[in-house]
Image (cartoon, rainbow, N blue to C red):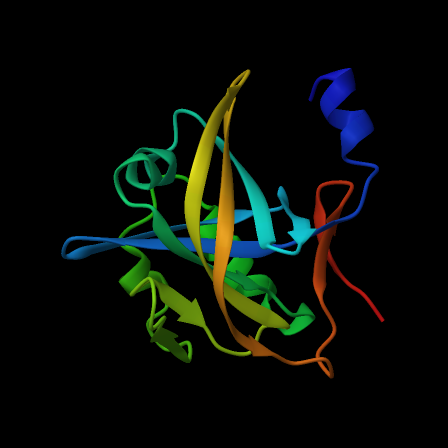
Length: 159
């Protein structure tokens, strides 16, 4: 771990699964670099590794979904974070989920919230790609669930 990476690991970040439907396949990955940019209009930003398969898919398909995971979903976060993983449909097998109305992407149930978004701008940023997106819909919110965060390289519950 580089000194920079270690320094940034000191900052707690929410954990989400970003998913996209591409033709007959579903692709998803765990992210901690997702943030609200604007409330009016509602915009979010997600940062993904430029060499990742999800980045390749999001460059072809603008609409996607993000499930903000709850503290009870550590196993889901780990499954989607594993390199060389199979189709997202296999990763959600046995986990309650549905498809978003606007994106057709997989949305995992039981998180603290889920949104559907449409990328409007894409920015190269070092070894990552930033996707600025307009929020199309808030799929659900569960304010009673505790969020899952990543801090110092580990998933941790809040609250």
